[in-house]
Image (cartoon, rainbow, N blue to C red; front, side, top):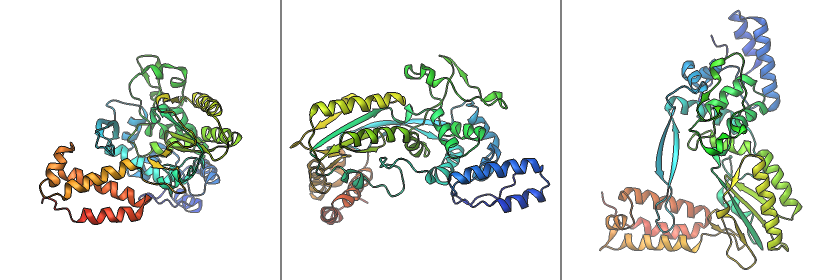
Length: 400
């Protein structure tokens, strides 16, 4: 029997007085009640907005889930509760097809992950240098930090989500005040074991918290014995957990940036440094080396092929936007692609069907949604330009 009233959707309200009253009426063990109240006080002292979660059964009750399904996920039982498939990434401005592998949780797991995201993770603050996946963050604002820079350094992380382990996720929940066992279980719920890889054969991916109470939580697989999971790209919990896992890294790299007269931001796996002052390529190489070492200390690997240094006078792009002026601007390639779309779509001898076929879209409606997405993006950056394009877009004769 659960003693806490079910929470509506993602809004949580919990009071120790109400908990005590319900527990007393249910004639629960006073020692158990006091232990729960103590655990709740620890969580609330960390952040009053966080909902107390005492056990896996309590989490199942709060999320309207089946306890045995959650226990199965925490045990890493087969089959894998994720569906893997390849999806098309947003095409480049030139319409080039791009793909990524996404792991989507099964509905019962997705429901719990959404609750954890909105009720718990949304109330935890990442480092101020993190400019993605948090309430109020906008792409334009993230790029604006680096406007009018004389020097710009851009770095990228390889397999960002997959590089963040179950251990890091466990530590996040512990830092929020949750008890060890439920922190471990929520870490399992938010991560995926995946297959063995060369990168995951190290000690960092084998040593993990083993609750003595539940032996079935020990996971043994081929290639190195017990292994731990990683953040799956496609789970609603992964973006915020990644940000929180990077807090110590962001603190270290932000300090590094300040020491070298640079501004630093991180948008998921994209790291950007900039300065308006004097700088040099030797200094840039030194900063990049220090940033790479910081990545290594937290188990990240740089994608060296995407490292860029933009000196004075060169074109400077951050998150797909031009930042070489006072305000972020849409790049020339974006506007040229939009011009071609509108030109061919408005021509009576070509129109939407032929244009969609020529540009490799699977359907006319898919192309229309793609262009509408580009217009929405443009509106955030250059509203007057987007309004002009939208007027032309409204005149297109779309097939029924």
